[in-house]
Length: 348
Image 1 (cartoon, rainbow, N blue to C red):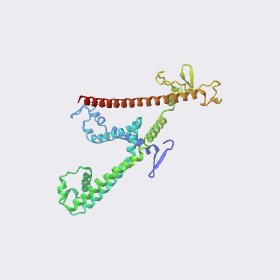
Image 2 (image 1 turned 60 degrees about the vertical axis):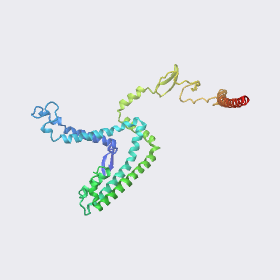
Image 3 (image 1 turned 90 degrees about the vertical axis):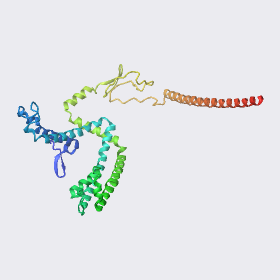
Image 4 (image 1 turned 135 degrees about the vertical axis):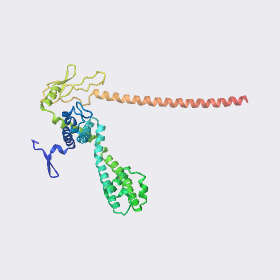
């Protein structure tokens, strides 16, 4: 606020941090906890611990002074717990899969809002129209009661036995049947199609969105870190010191050294190109002799080609050997059959 970071929302000048739902949720949680502190039954019963009422004693919540504040305190506790768990969804950034799922849910939530808006419009439309009919159904007497009955029908909470009463009123039954067809068959299937289309639209990009969200959270978190703590963290990393690849082999600076066993990632070819001369940053890098066309590279490529050819020949030889053994077995079987036939003929 001191820096003048304000945003105009619907003509109201609000602090800019309130425009983000996470910051607004943190502020709402703070306000809920402050109001809970004013309604805390333990504070109201602190001066009456030795009174003549059940449950007296230290830290008691049962006293005449707190009798009217328990309901408000419990309601605020429920709101505070909901806000607290909603803010914990920031921890989903530690897993790209969970973060992607959370982002997809947030993007398709607007489709659910459209469905609920259309359902509310239908409930008000049919409740007002049914209330204008001349009927004797108690479930649809007036707009509020009719809207509640239609909402129960849409949510599957309406008592099925009440449909017998509705069936006696033909006009009411027709209106309720039309509401069920539009709300439960048409709108519900339309919601499924909307969710499917919205999910397919963001499925390819949800991992990228998750990474951007993680980067945004990291950046906002770094901004809230004190300057001296951040400087101490950077100094402990020692980025200005050169890294040591092997004993006595000093490399570039600006990294974090991680030691590993020498047999973890064996390398038969030295991938580090070493050049003699000055290490001054102003001096240009010397040109690499050969640039990949030297004799060593040619021999390496020739060796790889020979190895691949040898493997192909070995594979072809094993296949031909298997085929020849199969053919030999079949020929032996045929000769055996022919020989057996001649023996039988001779015995006869």
